[in-house]
Image (tube, rainbow, N blue to C red):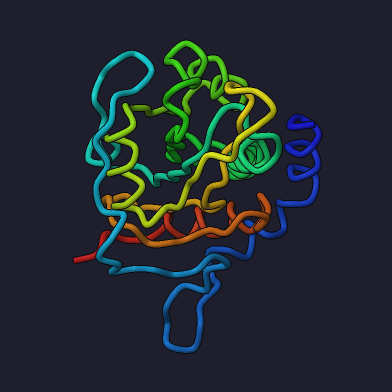
Length: 204
């Protein structure tokens, strides 16, 4: 399913990228498809261990355009679709896609072990970084990003699911939060916005 989504996006996305570099609104600001949250006073910092145990922060990825998404590996639809669309958007960007960094933050510390996380994100791209933490760490990170998540009981103790904010945060090369991308936007729209940020000159 994920592979089909990626292929479909690659077939119809080239024209979108051709126009992205010149899209502007009347005041000269970029015409993003996502919600522009430039200057927001939240979602500014993230400090959690990756699947190898190394603590990572947004500062580690300065120079790249970063996409952060909170989810869990047993998510049936929103999470795999979001990661597949990110992978498709990176491919649409061609060589420039290498300057886009995906970060997946698990909100399921009980089941999303480092090994599980590494295997999961690896199916969407070798360069996606998975972050995790204990209950307190994830709760603090989610609060800092205004991300909602809540466990929904299943038939057994281990078959629960998790309701969570279905959107991504996008950062420019200087590490500034710029966009709030809602679920279902699609890889073409995401690639359009990522290209604008990739081509953007450094802000003072």
